[in-house]
Image 1 (tube, rainbow, N blue to C red):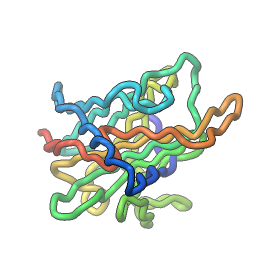
Image 2 (cartoon, helix red, strand yellow):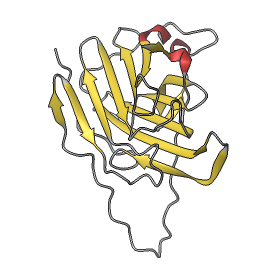
Image 3 (spheres, rainbow, N blue to C red):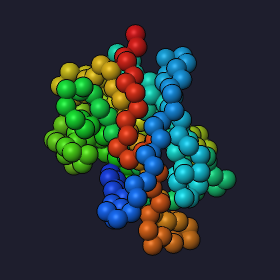
Image 4 (cartoon, one colour):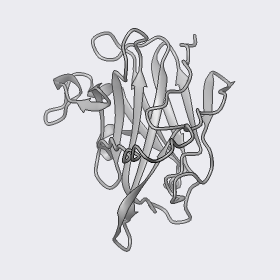
Length: 211
């Protein structure tokens, strides 16, 4: 497992609103009905709905135990090692049924960095305990992992549960990927290609704590 220091950052994007004269578009489909095996709950996303294949979210797996919360985001994969695009990946966490929106998020920018942070209104809200330079008191509770071949097959984020840092019982997640272009050769897109798990700011069902 690699620590948070190997990758990171945040990306919150919002698609343009349709003109009022335009007929409403069909609602985004919700993430598929979850499948739970070996203590992990998996939600599938539609294939080919990202506009570009690299950051087409295929499935999201949540493992919620008494000790830690792990979220794995799976993509189709690429042939080239480190064939990552320019762009972002955001994983929002809802841990409180009594309030709207997420409480925390994993935010990663390809070719840059990775952060875990508290959130307000779907935006990152930095706090000292999760900050860097210097590292906050809770940063050591984070681990980041990816497929062994580094071929964009999955990214996995884990935060340990500890009083004073991160605690949660049942959780639900929302995931967004943003593809802004190609790294090698460098070619930014005029407009980013965005994919969501089910839909923008669309939550999975609640995943109870196991064990």
